Image (spheres, rainbow, N blue to C red):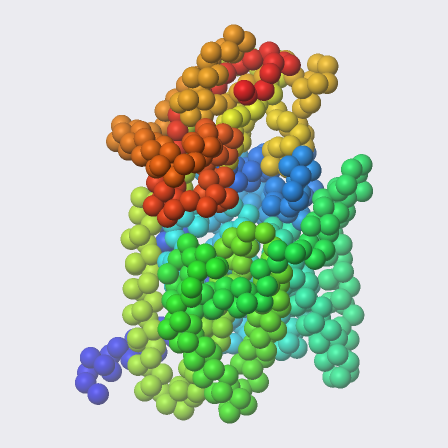
Length: 609
């Protein structure tokens, strides 16, 4: 071995000692390194005016309810077929987790971004800390590397989109490690697992079977193991029950109020058998695409669960896990086998839960699979690492050197990609910015307005964004009952109730729709804005011409009508059997968005024609 190798190995050994001895400092350093792409993305937003729209605006609409109207349930969810009786996510823990940092940044939109990144980094720090506490320094470093790979794949959009689907992803890692601690005999992990698991469940309903199923099974195992060892598990159980009762108190209060209640809606939706369940075959196919060395946790989101999986990546993943299991069994490595047992149970529960997904199979309903895939990767590599470095110091030093190089490369790669990052749907943000600036000063603070919209392109996303921004400017805007799950019930007003509202505002998007609404005798145009750049406008107009021509050639003139109908673009893309080339044109046309205008009409005026 030459002098350069000796010096490198000496430095690596010093680094290992620092990590072992200065646990808090090293934990902070590792978290910052792993989360550096997210931090770079956040810094890129400093000084940028951004307007939340769509689903992510629902998050800030919920945060703004605190402290005057404490939320009892979460944001609107894909629950039920009745738009007037839409359900929400089970609980509002996301709001209370995000609110402290949001308040610290004076309830600003930038504060939403900061709070989301902070929550993700806190979960990453807890994950690394628990991995090192239960498995030692080597596992902590392997976990940090795997998380860095996942952060690179997700950054920057994941960290700049305060969407409830994203928020519990890293928290689920913490839950899985707490289950492992429980199996290892650390009884105090049970209350923490209830706390973190409940947060995941309340934030997105897809975690319900994974969390509740795992808690029942491993809680029962912990009770049996404690009895066998002659120990008492009474205190952890009491704490777990107290934490669970406290966290589920707000949803229970909401359920006991007049009306069907959100928990009842969720039970009616998910507690019954649906004829259009995706089935076991589709679940296996989806899992093959996720538990994959070329899967989304490495390459990034965007792969649909029904797409063909990368077979080489899947087989490589299975081979890695199989080697890890064989090595652990042959070495009788109890600690590794315990984590593999936890992941096996969670994987089986996840497969069964996925097979019961009904309706359109979106990728976001299985986002917890990222954590499952990463945990299987980590425990497999760790198992092999322990075997290879058990008695060979030279092998350990060389592998550590390779690990450090790969770790730094992944961090730099992700950080460079995050420079100058912006959240998605930029033209939606521009539309809200343009309209709200024109409306500022035109709306009277003493007047209560009912906001409605006709939106072919953005699924009403700009409507919720405009509601949020005008509220920040001090105006009083409300919505119809059907939008109450997203806007929160206290922002709902009934136009038919005397004195409920003083005027009605219509947000109308699309040039044809704006022209039609402008011809109404009862409509006064207050604002109009085109968020498209000059090049986008030329592209959009050209696409519109090509789309209409192709639809006529296909003898489907009714499709042209959908281009200007309420949520029509998504109706074409999701529910109409159109050729692939036409699909691509409509998708791009919708992505560019269309102009918008705000009109004021009297109370009781006709709806959009």
